[in-house]
Amino acid sequence: MSVVYDTEHPIPMPPILWDNMGFWEGIKRHELVFQRCKQCGTWLHPPRPACPKCRSFEKEWAPSKGRGTVYSWVTYRNSPHPSFKAPYSVVLVELDEGVRLVSNMTGVKPEEIYIGMPVEVIFDDISENLTLPKFRKVG
Amino acid sequence: MIVRRYMYEFGIDGDQFGWVPVVCREHGAKNPNSMYYKKPITMNDYHKSEMVVDPLRRLDYYEEADAAAALVITTAERAQDLKPKPAYILGAAQAMVAETEELNSYYRKNISTLPEMAQVGKKIFSMAGVTIKDMDCAQLDDAYGPFVPMQLEALGFCGKGEGADFCREGKRIRLGEELPVNTSGGSLGEGHIHGMNHVIEAVHQIRGTSPAQVKDARLVLVASGAGGPASGIIIGGK
Image (cartoon, rainbow over all chains, first blue to last red; front, side, top):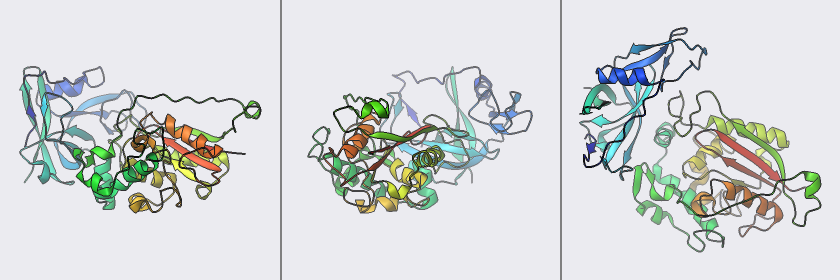
């Protein structure tokens, strides 16, 4: 099951700021990219100014293979926003690169989601101005 | 996210979390200042309570409260001349650790423990020169019920993954037992005043004026900020 949007209400837009701009530019191009520290190679997410491991400010946007597993998940039985129709699930995906991303699943019912489920990224073009990375079950 | 992972890693059935709101409401039912005065709930009410964000039920969450709380803090020397019996802050600390995030600390390696709270615990026990065993009761952050067993673990009252069992049937956390938790009712059983009511209850316990009084309470632990930057104090008489 995917998230069903109520188009009567504007979908809240992700706040795009200096640190996460590269991430959202990648999503627009249908590429999942994460910050990677240029000094020690640590993958970073959510985007931030400095590497928490080596404190370097030098980072690059590196492409992710877009595969991982469900690390945790919840199901909203009540919607916190009029544009999202409940029920829908939110997953915390751990990518093979080691970073985690909060997202939604497509094509599975909430009761079919489990911790450890293998998933891969897809790109949902919701509107002209909004593309979101989402996940589908692998295998 | 944190609670689901906690359940997964330690094999905890979500139904077990119900003992926290049940005990908080039991204590709050004795408290005339509580939103839930004379309104206790049962485990059956908890099981019937709707899922809001699965795995959390309506009764796992605090309700918004319109209320105010205030504390007068002064030097120990001046406090001696005041009319009401003073309560002393014996230890106080705040903590953040590497990769603490406000309200979304689920990007770090391990999310099924509360390392900030563990840090706060270590610090306040050493400042106060007391141990866990000396605590007569605890006022813990219960804005979300499942964080109570996680705090009991982080502060050292039980081992990792044992918090839900510690709360089971309220046998160890209700008034009269080993460690009464949230004797005013806390956020779930009195009202959510962002933890200020927890501090006031600690003072009541030291003064002997709580509606759910722990007999001869001498040391009370108050903790706040579970799941993010955390803080805690130990309050005592003299």
